[in-house]
Image 1 (cartoon, helix red, strand yellow):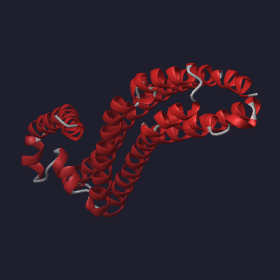
Image 2: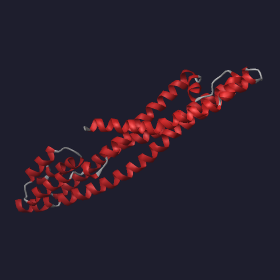
Image 3: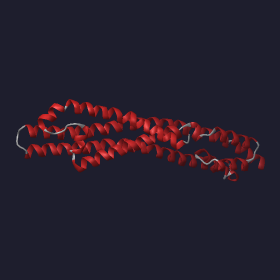
Image 4: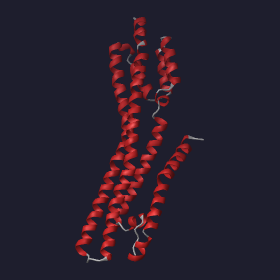
Length: 256
């Protein structure tokens, strides 16, 4: 089974876990509101609330759904890619260590070029400056490590962006619902119709807030988890890199 197929299955599973309970909850709310629907002639279920929120509400809910799908995709992708074995391949480390023990820098460079990645880029930064002295090697390795760390952290930050956008979308929906509620209070006459419309507007406001929080809480939680996990991997990678690069000091002495 290919990686893309596994990823699609994971997305489908997470979508089912997240959305099936929400749909069931919406069905319960619709059942509980049947009596009110019969008396007022309006719908208070989730789908009725979304449909009655106007074009802006539909756009907000569509954005929330897309944001949740993006967050789910990133979470699954990071579970696959943000791992020590993917960022620090054992085969690459063993081959480079063996080449450095033999004093064959060219062999180590060729091995890194065969398997591009964060660790390979950092090692190549040191290997390409082997004739410049060990101080220059350490400087170039440090600069390459900072660059690769920034690239890795930048990918994880997209999950934080999803978690930050969701509550703002929910807040915008809340503001829209409250504006509509007060507008109806100002323009409608007192009675059952006004109470029903007011309840619908407040429900629209609260549902968008709840939707934003449902997306934001897992996204921010997983962002913190992957950020800390990636920080530990980066520290391990930098320590391993310095350990491998130390052999270049011996190579330099032999050449002199």
